[in-house]
Structure formats: structure tokens, C-alpha cells
Image 1 (cartoon, helix red, strand yellow):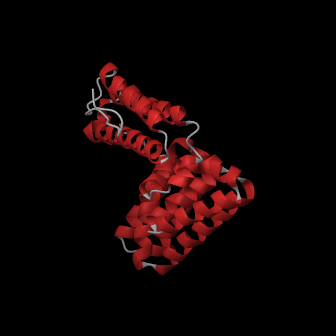
Image 2 (image 1 turned 90 degrees about the horizontal axis):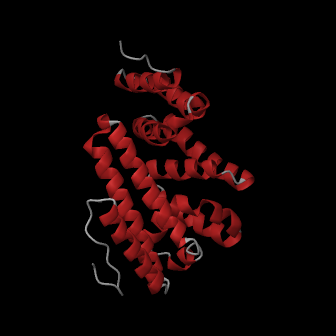
Amino acid sequence: MPTPPSQAEQWLRDAQAAVARQEPAFALEKYLQFFEHALEENPALSAVRLSFCLSGWADLGKNYPPAQLKLEQYCEQSLQKFMATGIASDFHDYLAICRHIEKSDAALDTFCRIHESHPALAASVHDLIWEQLVQAEKWLICASYLDDYQKKYELALDVYLGSMRIAQKHPDTGDEFITISLQRFADHIRHLISALEHTGRQQQADNICGSANQAIITHQIALDSFTCAGRKPQ
């Protein structure tokens, strides 16, 4: 027999079913329950909370203004809580909500202001917005967070290898999981190389190129060689 859903999982299913039945008030109630309490039941639901839950909630808000208003309130509250407590998960909530309500640019601007006014606080969560900083070419800010460039590389590789171990242990994760994990690893390495090159750290960028290309060989990673401005592909 299939395993029955947990209470938190049932909240999410109830929300989705309520949307299908065109019962937006009940759907909002269930999305709120999941967002507020799912982690109390199972911390492993963190990714679901910031993806499927927020995605469904944001879609609901497009046609049901109270849901949109509530989501915007939670966005502001998450930022206020982070500024007051320094708890990284609150900033993670803020970024995720901004992404789902199409305010990622505003979130980047907010981080840049925090970087100037509260540098230690910004440093504690910069990894959560690192990709966006690189894509926006905020090189001066990126430079502040490159002293641990080797650690960034090692973390990206560890996350990828860990994902592959999960895929081997649980084949039902599917090819999409493997493809996404591979793309994330490639993006992380390319962003790191780009940030190093644009902040005058060419030798360090070359080092990362070399390490990443060796990892491709050692771990048989299905990627082409990484290249740097000062290094030819091997």
C-alpha cells in the first residue's frame, strides 16, 4: 500500500485541490499552514516550501488579491526578521518570495544596501545571492566574498558529487535530477571563474579551471573543459 501523506504534505495537496475547485480562500489557508509549519514536522521539506508551495501561492495571488497581499507581507516580514536577528533562513525566505513575485531585482538592490550598511550581516548570507551578484556583474561586491574562493569551489563539487550519490542510490530520481545537478555545478564553477577574472584574480581563476577540469576527468563528469582568459582548455 502507498504511504499516506504526512500532515504537511496533505496541507499542500489540499491547497492544490482547493485551487482546482476554485476555492481560493481555503487554498490560501492551506498554503499558509504549509509555509508556516511544514518545517516543524519535517525539515527536509525546506526545498518544497520555497519552491512548490511559493509557486502555487504566487499563482493563486495572480487571480486572488488577498493571496498576493499576504505573500508581499511575508516578504517584508522575512526581511525585517533577518535584519533584526541575522538568521540566514529568514533572508532565504525573503529571496525566494521575491523571486516568485518577480522582485528579484529589488532583492539584489536590498542586498547591495545591506552590504554597504551592515557588511558582516551581508557576508553571512552572500552565498544565497552569489549567482545573482555575478549575473548582475556586481564585481566590486563580489570581490569582498572571494577570499574563500577555494571553499566555494569545493562546496560546488561536494554538492554535485553528493547529488550523484543520491541518484545512484535512488534511481527513481530520474534523468532530470541528474541534468539539473550537472547544470548547477557547471554554473557555479563558471560564475566563480568569471568573478575571479573580473576582480583581477586571474591566477586564482586559472587554479579553479585546473581543479575543475581535473575533477571532470577524475569523476567522469559529463562536461566540456572549463576555460579561462589566461588558460587554454586541456
